[in-house]
Image 1: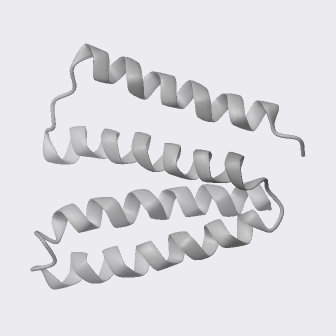
Image 2: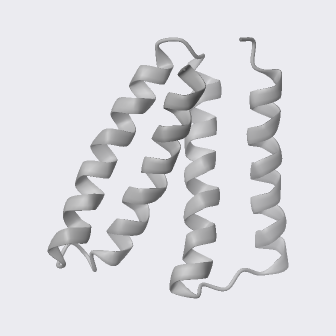
Length: 106
């Protein structure tokens, strides 16, 4: 379950970051509420996962999921452009997340 909690925390990390962008500086009500609730919920699920996971691994995976997911949604939802070096860096983050999961002592 600890990995599920961490996955939920990562998904909520992406949710609040995208909602924050959509809130237009917290001037649009619903995305602002989603950003606030998502931020708190993400931290709560991370805290639950941290009860059983090493903090370095869990935090790195949480932020990595947030970076990759938010970057991908930025490209698809907001038409952000990524250069080849940026794509390579995102791929390296994905490899790092996978490596942390594979090497984690369960």
